[in-house]
Amino acid sequence: MMATLLMTVSLWAQAPQVLGDSHAMYPLKVQSHYLLLPVQEKEEVANVRVLADNEQVHSFNVKLAVDKVDYFVPLDIRRFKVSNLLLDITFHGDRRARGVMKDFLCWREMKQSDTFDTTNRERFRPIYHHTPLYGWMNDPNGMFYKDGVWHLYYQFNPYGSQWENMNWGHSTSRDLMHWEAQPLALEPDALGSIFSGSCVTKGNDVVAYYTSAGQHQTQSMAVSKDGGITFKKFAGNPVITANKPDFRDPNVFWYEATQRWIMILAVGQEMQIYSSADMIEWKYESSFGQEYGNHGGVWECPDLFELKDEKQNTKKWVLVCNINPGGPFGGSATQYFVGKFDGHQFTCESMPKVTKWMDYGKDHYATVSFYNAPENRRVVIAWMSNWQYANQVPTLQFRSANSIARDLGLFTYGEETYVSVVPSKEMLAARGEKVKKPTEACEIVVDVKNQAEIVLSNTKGEQVVMKYDAASQTFTMDRTKSGDVGFSEAFPCVTEAPTYGTIKQLRIFVDRCSIEAFDAEGKMAMTNLVFPSEPYSIVKVKGGKATIFKMKD
Image (cartoon, rainbow, N blue to C red):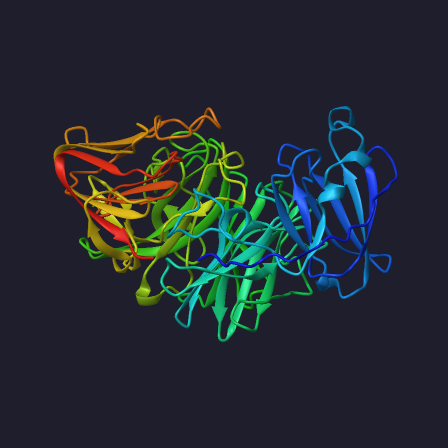
């Protein structure tokens, strides 16, 4: 998945003009494609305004290095199409702790280069999960399928590996396993940063809806004429406004019965539904959420779609509601509601206090589905992290991966209907040869009995312990001794999921920094990050039999 470029560096550098305790200007003669900016993550962000011919042409925040360089990020200076630029830089933080600005390491380490090296230098970068080439990633956005290609956009910071500067990054895939990085799709503008949203296809066009996060959060749209590679923002943005502090993450789909487009928005601790005939003028229809489900945090990243219960031969609607905090084991998680939708209002069939979680791990959030997936499938991908520690996980070149793709359905247990979650069929195609021992990228299939224990470990004594108990109908995963767990007090934990009946087979997906466990029938899913000092190479199973498949490259 990773692209490799050789770095050719020009040693030309311009001295900064220090204008005060926190302000400097950096004149720049454009000689190469990129200016490589040195980042030091412990520092406070500095605001950089890029000026060309006395006009601001770009602005972003970056943690410029004061006394140590953790890594470099590229600023594309060729794009501005001028020979001279001026960087107007304002530093934040305590000057007494930072030292004298003229001595900052960043002035000596800034370099111009015609290329930026994206060679993978991280031992925890997954092999078969989607990651950005570099920088920070969180929520998946705007996912759609068209002409045999899966498009995945995501919240992206090009100027550091921690949350900041929200853009829409973009990757594409033909098999949901190998991803190709594409150019930035949407960048901040005068209305604000580009927060989460969705894409739909209309004829040959791809229409994106996203939150403009400025002084207030408003909803905007953009249209692509080239299949989702480049977008032109609508001149009449924003298309929806509200007097609400948390008003974001528009998810749009076509509702055939009323011949209208439907938008569901996260607003504080409820979801609001809007409709439109022309995709521009939106009418408020209804709200859902008061007293229903978990309200431990802000509701975010909604989705609304219809699923089928194959055994019952019935169809029901599912409203997905990602919440942070409030997850079953702290931090962020994905809850959902099952019920009816008539084009105007969603009605939940469960009692208000019933809470249903799509995944019982610590690292499954911002789950949304692909628009127009083939064969009427409902395919979802989640952000594989947790806001409790996402900025601190032990990687530098990049932070965060996405889960494997999963297909959703429905099943009934007792008097309730639940969402079933199974690895997408593309993951079966990704199976390679059978091997005797776990590898750093493998699937472990375990046929289990009433009581089962699966222990994944390495020669350092680091281990993950998974237990299935048919009597209590639970599955647990213990990562307290999984490797590096010291970067956050919230990371070491034991997660537990209900199994809603018996499990006959477990499918466990292992990658360099993650373990995703599924009931093969879809009644349980659990996603947890792990950071072992060396790959797990030993598996011991009590009460079951394991078959190990190496994942294809």
